[in-house]
Amino acid sequence: MKQMIVHCEPKQTQMALMEEGKLVEFAVERSHNHSLVGSFYKGRVVNVLPGMQAAFVDIGHKKNAFLYVDDVLHPHLDKQPKEKPSIDELLRVGQEVVVQVMKEPLGSKGPRVTTHFSLPGRWVVFMPNADYVAVSKKVSKEHERSRLKMLGEEIRHAGEGIIMRTVSEEEHPEAIAGDLSLLREQWRKIQKRADASCAPSLLHQDLSIVQRFIRDVFDPQQDELQIDSAKEAKEAEMFLEEIAHGSHLPVKVYHGQEHIFKSFGIQEQMERDFSRKVILESGGSIVWDQTEALTVVDVNTGKYIGGDSLEDTVTRTNLLAAEEIARLIRLRDVGGIIIVDFIDMEMDQHRQDVVDRLEAGMSKDRTKSHVVGWTKLGLLELTRKKVRDDTAMLFTKPCDTCDGTGKINLLGIH
Image 1 (cartoon, rainbow, N blue to C red):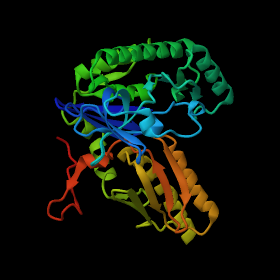
Image 2: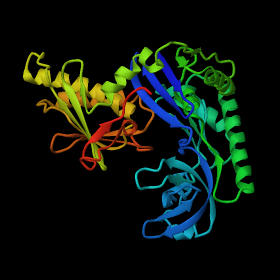
Image 3: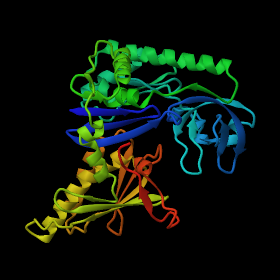
């Protein structure tokens, strides 16, 4: 069972996702700073750089968007030229182009954009120009994968692409086809606005934070939604009715006297989970350090001495740490290169057990990740797609006294 706990303020909305009582995702959306990812813009090419195989596109924000050559070519690999053309053969300065944001502005970099358009729905992801059908890897039953693949081929139009999402497993064909029809109509509206607009202009903005989580992770049959705003609760009910007709969303309006995050134990978990040093239930610990290029996680036995032997103690600590690290990577929304310094183990099987435990935990994550493997120095290397700044950045700021080598904790209920 999952719980979505939502705290609403005039200028921002905070959302916490709980699984079996544990905090697994946290997100903040400010009214003046809506997430750009997923939004469509009509932009104007302001610079074409053959040496970088990229172009910069003005979409109306402070920093121009970055458009790489691979994101200009056809989204289907089989329809791309055998030899990659130069970016200046595809785009020219002053050209108007419709793009979709795939990465938020990070640090000194502007947003990254693509022409490989995708519109996610409840059951499917619609790709107007991709010309293929794919099924989520998390759908494991072979007969169900075949059914969804065949259904996708039946309901798509020529040239269109569809990804069958995990939640489409065992879903009725009419519901999936209806979802596709809504997304197809949404794409028509975007095209119509693009034809009528001058660059730069916003053509389509992705859903609000609450609506995105309802669409992507919420099961109305067994999950729960608590919101401390009657207005937002009503909007959530209307949204689910729109995307999943006949579904009953168990929305509860929170009327408690204390802060909703405090009432559900979220504040206490956040203070623990966003600390530099996180203590494991066994007494061991994991320490997080972040640089511009990568995140480093160090595992220690701490006070845990409970194994039958040193190897047993170390392995148990590492297994617990792997499970917790997978959850915290998802919660903190860590992206890029991640290096984990597990405690040294002698047996290859124990090292594989740790990798398996980490991969099992990260399989629950909606953001694409990959466990690369052990380095020659005995460190475990993994990567996770970086879409926006880490969530932990919301709760710290550089320290003026030490010129940014330390952080000031801003975590707390406001």
